Figure 1 (cartoon, rainbow, N blue to C red):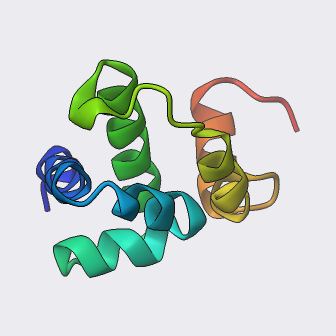
Figure 2: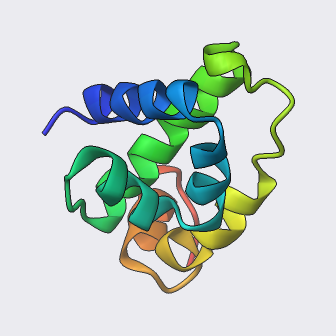
Length: 97
């Protein structure tokens, strides 16, 4: 599954219906599944979110002013301390236990 292609699918859907951006912020996992038809694991969801965030900040879909802070809050359980992805990222970036 190509995470970048899925992020582009999400951005295309948001570009066609900007109200989808709020759905993406409120429930990234659910919005990704609804918009793309793909059920992703936690790591893939985090990757898609990062791609979408970077596309938005680079000027994609005219959403540059969108507050993306809530996405991080919604994903807190996916990448927070004690989560499998959080531990993996900590290991990669040298977090000490």
